Image (cartoon, rainbow over all chains, first blue to last red; front, side, top):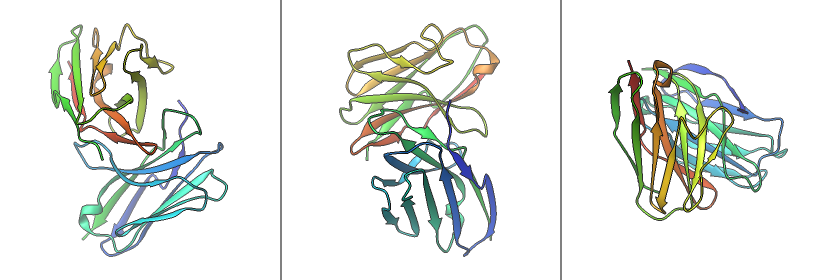
Length: 111
Length: 113
């Protein structure tokens, strides 16, 4: 099925560093969602975006809905060990019921 | 947010058998979804389940292999039929909770020998 282009696929950073990841699509989305998945768990919703240009924060996490409606990014500031995991973006077309997922970004943090 | 539980959390099954996975939501929801996540991969939608109607399957997934029930607004089951080792995966259910968000269960880890 269709997937979003999510990058980078993996990141290896030092604790305290900031993190940035993004998703792009050839199609316009009405909604962008960002999830985090820990090992052995289901994805947990971090941030939901509904309007082009929208910038939303959740603690140290900030996500933006791109102006073109074809991209979104997620930033994590001052990373800590519990940020380790796989981050997925997901988009929803207007009127659609299902989500399209990115390939995921695996974040590893060196203490 | 919604609280979603799945049973079983994991199972090891023999080739040729079937496993039914249950998904329970803590409140009534219109849409429920079933995904498969193979090791190290992203989520792939199997089907969408509405209460009172047949599930809608994505390309590559068929009802005979993955029958789904949705008897009410808080519960759904996915059966993985006639299993083979290729069915070893994580199976996740999710539910729509407004506005336009989906929440996921913890997943069912299936190993087929």
